[in-house]
Length: 491
Ligand code: ADP
Ligand code: ZN
Ligand code: MG
Image (cartoon, rainbow, N blue to C red; front, side, top):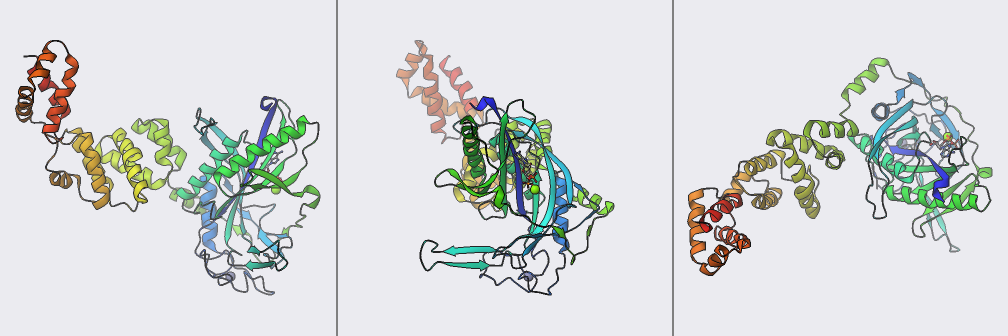
């Protein structure tokens, strides 16, 4: 059934800009304070209070916009979006409408469909258009208690009222739920890279509404779209879209028409519910905000912000593949987080072995960090320690097996690799005469196996090698042991 239809998705993402104070007053944006303690006449919407624009919010919005290839308008204006809601004391939200902060952006990113187990099938690059990024203030928060009881109560907390947001609206360019998923992940990663948003969907500082419609494959016209809300995690976005696509196909297949409406995702029941139809849709009566001057951004200001941007995740991933010869998956995982990517580059450079650096970071180190619940930036292990360890493996001073122990210890204490190896009773024994001595002893004390070997059971080589390594306390270099043992056995 799916093949008959093409899916069309567009996303609206709200990102909380991580300024210390609100967008139009000096109240704190800190999360988790006593309700209504971070408020003043401006963010309470008291009559006569006047907004004053927070310049840092504009700077952060500019960083986000440029990272997403948006064009920043030389002059943009704020508009009032009028609606009534208890958590919006002014009766309007200060937002942007017909002259937004920035427009005409795009990203070109890896995306893949997933199989039932959630594994990516085949990664390919795809370009998605971004219509606009505009700036607005957040509303307050309503809390409801005992809604089904006679004594139900509702509370309003205005700590969030006036917190700066960037709203990022995409073109209807996604053709599957996984494309939408990969896009929001990339958006989040980019906002973290340019340090303007904490990117936590569960905490609500990154929020996503998804618009979805279907049309018969080959048709030019878009179908009627449904807006999905209450998507509090990346997976919910993907799951809600899948559910909604199936629902719309069933509606059309039954000969009905999809109605334009807003639907809420219910995670517990894994389905969407109608919230409001188009007839109830808001008419916001936008008009220019008279209490704020236009936002004017000069060409040289844009250039300065652009110059200060870090290398972004996707260009960095490509460079990792080209410059260090990494596999696509490894490079993608390393750039997922800027601190990990930085750690990798330092280690790759200092150790002279980028592939080993990637392997150690993505496997053993990732495991260590996970089990201790530490971030890479908090770990006692520094990149020079890891580089030293990799050089020791490459020179044969320690074996890969010993290195695992060394790494665990480095993650615990932060001590240099050489010091830890000394404490372990020394590194790998590569001294041939020492190994020959042990090997001779082992062969001598196992005459039965020796006879069998010489009678043709050459598989016993492994037995002798194992014994020698054991006798050396696990320190003998396996490559040399192999050579020496073979030589003795075949004498
Ligand atoms: P509205 O006027 O309802 O806000 P917009 O045209 O501003 O609609 O689009 C809002 C979001 O919906 C954008 O992300 C856009 O890409 C997406 N969108 C628009 N039309 C469709 C459609 N037919 N199917 C899916 N998404 C759509
Ligand atoms: Zn305030
Ligand atoms: Mg719109």
